[in-house]
Length: 143
Image (cartoon, rainbow, N blue to C red):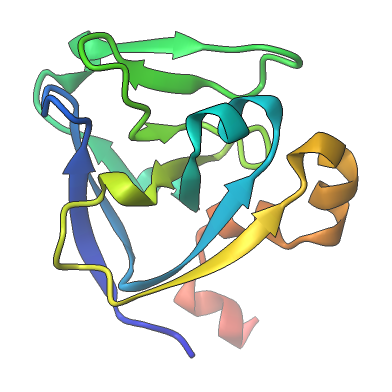
């Protein structure tokens, strides 16, 4: 069941990093057990980059951590250390939004899925995660 697209807002703990994202009110979130996500307890949903916007002067409070292939860009607040969003290896054309960093009131349903980050390539090939950052055009149905 498709849900209505809404504007969600959110950010880090100290509120120096703020953003908004257009996404469904019902989202599929991923709990990854890679070495980074498991330590942080990160659970996120993925959107196309063009659906996500960093607000105000938030960029000056962000820093980035990379490891392994250096494809994923793990952003976090320089002040409070919270990763409210990042650019995932699975979707370099998208943004992974930390579900617990979304302000209350706009999410109506959250479906949890597991991503086997310890066996990253195998999980990538078995899931549809790469499709989640693709922009769906209404014109595609007529082609």
